[in-house]
View (cartoon, rainbow, N blue to C red):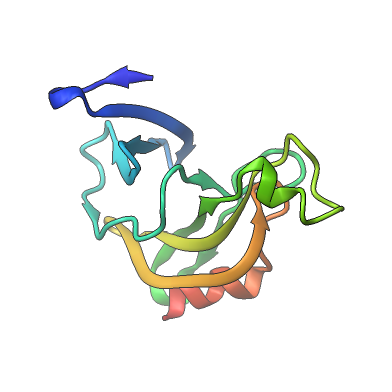
Length: 143
């Protein structure tokens, strides 16, 4: 954890490299932010789900991404937020204690720039290491 200006806590909760660009998810005193250290892409939009947030991954811990060249989307990613605490997870017998589960998912599109989608998927819970079906990524990209 890092301490930022005005005693706001800033924590990098997750990161990945996509298309040669490092993307970081930040928890800034409960507000999620997406940042990059590259000038290759400009970021548009805001994270609308509650931090901390994490990139959805497959069972091999690789960040899931789908491309939709028909509409110029190089990569479609998804992040999960509104994370369940241990007490909330205890209501679900199949949830592993160390697994991260959240109630909302938001999309990230890499085109000529990076766009955080307005579309939010509700209702989970969604596991970071199980992810979503490809149809959900398609919906983020085509919405």
